[in-house]
Length: 508
Ligand SMILES: O=P(O)(O)OC[C@H]1O[C@H](OP(=O)(O)O)[C@H](O)[C@@H]1O
Ligand SMILES: Nc1ccnc(=O)[nH]1
Image 1: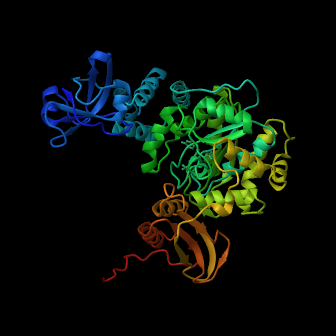
Image 2: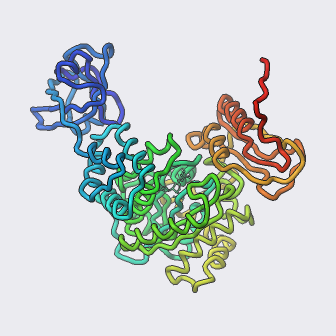
Image 3: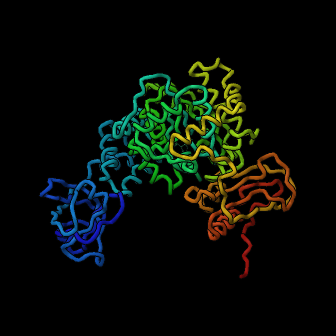
């Protein structure tokens, strides 16, 4: 067949065939073909997309993801053959049926994922099967090791290499922007890799991107860490555990984080950067990933055990997740809130306390301070300006502007105050609904989008007073977010009418 006009400029591997050719080759939409560039001796296996109109029979179009390996030009001749189903599909089926995967089976799944032989629906099936049926500790260890083995690794020839991670799930959890500079300011090395948002409205990689680039190779991460003491980079940008970011890509739209994959995702990133000492934040509470403290302890045990198997000393902080950390949710809003603390603001208290508690644990684990004195030492590093100076070093080493201040971060110009429906005390806030509103307003893609929570549980409000301000960069997004806030009523004031059953029908 002839390579027809222009490549589809996407990284995903796929081959576009005319329906007549697909019938002749014997493949249907989603089946795999192998495409051969015989003169160059290259070949790629990829899923098929079928069209009746975009190309004519005898012609084929490929994505640039395919051509990266195939190296052909428009008009070249290629050979296409139906290809067997990837071996890992049987193993995904096994997990769907509640089976236990061997190390070899997990390795095959990871290999087929990273080679992009598995289609999005097959990856989603794998995640969903593990979400429903779970992975035991041996399966999680295999997945973690295979994720690490599929990418690049760092080895520092000094110790300790500290790390910090949160399992996520609580809105507004911008503490990494405080914890990393504090730890680095104490003289420790912390090559922090983060994900983008998974179930939330802004992951740490999204937040850091408002201050500096976050895409680096492992060698760059190592050099920058040695120079500045720390970095905050995107784990998925590099070739660090590439299967991890693929899983996250398919978890994000579902707003799920399958437990086994979550453990592997976190610990693979720690192992790949060579960290030996790690503090892990486990927010617990309604509307987070972990409903209560008891379950938080079970997860802590799993993370510590996984760390032990991988040679990483792990301590976990079970933290309050019943309400957002701080008051801002969304990229620029969160970054501004974190920078304000580094610049000398005393609060919000929840953000300050949580950040120094976590940083303090790392200072204690590494012997920088005695047990019981870490949080105080961390607080000192914030109050004396050393953490701010270190954050500027980190921003600069990553190629951002170190002169940036909290005031430079713009919030969306489409703004709406959600008023309190009556007088009273705020009795609860609904985490998931707050995240949904911030995502609907445009976060994390629109850096100015998000929300500010004026009132948190226990605080008094007067009828009509703003309880929530929504920011959006685009008017239509603001309208949708307002509508969502009206329906979900994410800040619950005592005595408030939550709903009417049957609902009132308005006549337009
Ligand atoms: O979107 P949800 O699921 O809430 O959480 C994902 C976030 O949690 C972790 O945070 P950190 O890197 O420890 O700061 C991840 O790296 C990611 O940024
Ligand atoms: N699944 C994950 C949760 C939190 N952080 C991660 O990097 N990955």
